[in-house]
Image (cartoon, rainbow, N blue to C red; front, top):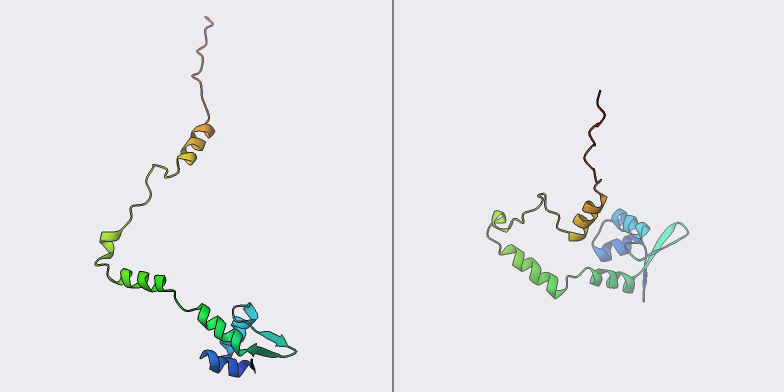
Length: 109
């Protein structure tokens, strides 16, 4: 296990030192600020890089998407007046205000 400063970590990750500092400050890259300086452990940075590798399933999905011929053939129809959630339509029916027809005045003048 070896500790790296900000510049060494940036070289290890092939990123600009300011980008490494920003990501470490946000908690994206594992590191610790010791006083005024950042410190990184090379094993932690290697594990961070490994976590970014795509899984084999993700790689297969990317290849499948590249084989689609035309975007317009794969369009999914959205919207409309029909609610896709039956519970929502039941709730709408319950919330509708029930109105009764008005009575006509039956008094004669």
